Image (cartoon, rainbow, N blue to C red; front, side):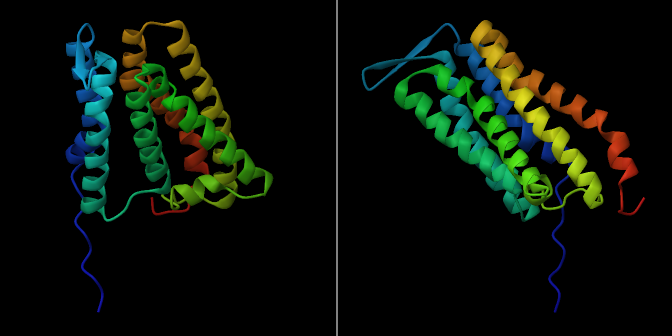
Amino acid sequence: MTQPQRQQPSALTRQLLEFGPLLIFLAVYLYMRDATVTWGGTEYGGFVVAVVVFVPLQVASALAMRILTGRLSRMQLVTLIMVIVLGLATVLFNDERVFKMKSTFIFGLFGILLFIGLWRGQSWLAFVLDQALPIDHEGWMILTRRMAWFFLVFAAMNEVVWRNFSTDTYVLWDTFGQMAVMFLFLISNYKLIEKHWIGER
């Protein structure tokens, strides 16, 4: 007997789960950026407080997405683990620089792993996305190569931003800038995806 198909959440629900924690992180930071909070005799700045709020919200969002959709991609799972580890390290060391390097670690790691897969003649992007895009093998290989370079450049961009600009600028980059750059990259690969599409049209 086949299991009934799980009803997928609406687009609005997905957007709230994906972007809600980031927007709350931004709101908490803007409210607390000039304040400090004392816990256990240690003073924490507004950025660290925002991280303390963000990490459990991100975990709750991922769990809600898992319950509603029945799955989390491997990429989402790795990203969540990195967020938890770096968030905890940020609080333990009381050093906002740790969390600012989040995107450097995450995208740098993804880029290196994708290049290792390409060296082995495989598209690990297809593996981590669970074949979410119905494109042929050649398309996956080209997209993987592009994505690998993009991830490394993206990691370098994050280093430039957090090392050379104010925390206010970094927070805007982390919440809006990264999403905009990722969106532009995906749009730039539309023709490739269309050319190698093997799913229903």
